[in-house]
Image: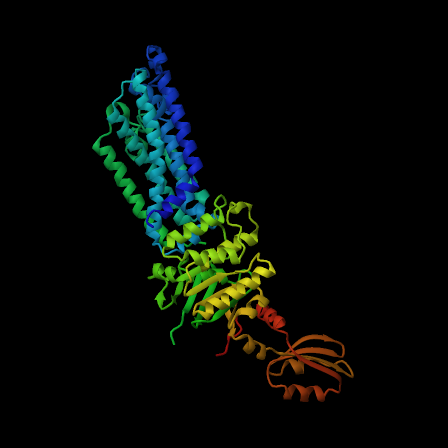
Length: 260
Length: 304
């Protein structure tokens, strides 16, 4: 069946997916519920603009709905949790399962290697979508707590963060398929993601870093205040292009990988 | 003759390390082919190349007439595989493993699987992490046998099985070959292989050192001679004879292996005033140990 590998991997990641989604949803719910208590504290707006604030993803006025969500969810925790999920799965799905000795049995089934890889990419997308949906629902609940945020923008940013997570997850898969080691894949994926986050968050306050922001996938997803400005076609195009290139590279690398 | 497995110059190198070197094998249909070698000899690497899990550095392999690299999906459809270091999903039960693999293959006979589960007395309803090595191995065997494959590639299949289950496994092998399946079975234990295999290949340090039937190997075994002379002798003369290896000297006692003609040896011994002489064929175990120990440069022993 065409989705057997996807379903198997989703089952293997069931607990972590649920915990990631439930934890992040709970956090998002607390953030939106607290908004009415903070929205009139304009002194908080003074926090933004500093390098330290930028490091935490705070780039605009904290008391506006977009600023509040950006500073507490979309500028930091949500992308980071998404990256934990996708980079973690990207490292486990190929190199990790090969190190565990289970991937060989699956690869010895009458399924093309690229079919296995596509199904694993599908499993990653399902996990990322579950997380993003849980967060988006909780953020939209915020409309009942004075967070006047556009549902379309919320869904668009969630989709952009999903794409960004898939990009890094697929890049991690590529490294795992080439190196054959979970640790190497995890290190490379996490390292790239951390660099991307730093560049995206500091670009707003450090002019020297500013030109490099276009290299950051965080910048193209939620790091450019997309929750307030909306996600542009260029943002989506950049995220899609990187994802497609990473998927092709992952298919090629997995097709050539020596499995145990 | 069409061979079920045919490899030609199969070689696998990892960086500077050669795991398998220039391996050429042919396995006939309906036979059990034993693939013997010490740990680290290259058995599992060879099997992984046959299963298209690893790409050969050089050479090629065909399985069931199909190129392994180009037609891996078709090969996998017709082959049952048990890896040497079998690992299953710890939280899934044996039943869940069997169901998942059956679904993934499609068209698997459920009653045959039920029969196998019963026959091997598999603990199917507990998570694999709670099972013994033997019970996990039985699940692995069922995953390999479930679709009644034309070829079974089994890497150390009886590892962890108790004698009763080993016996059951051997019976199943005979039934499968009786129905036309071919078995390629690796092991580092001679006893296991010689009970079931029609033909044996021995691999050492990645190179094929012998390939023959069990009887053929037995016939090729050296004669073990022990001679006691009236006085100490220089063994160099004996060592110089073709097919003679002096294995020990202790004063007037000399032990030697003879693989060539025995006449010249006896004549030389007679000229040195022997007091006592015993001669016996080497045990198969000794023969295999010799193959394991021999340097890889030794000529491959082939027989049809």
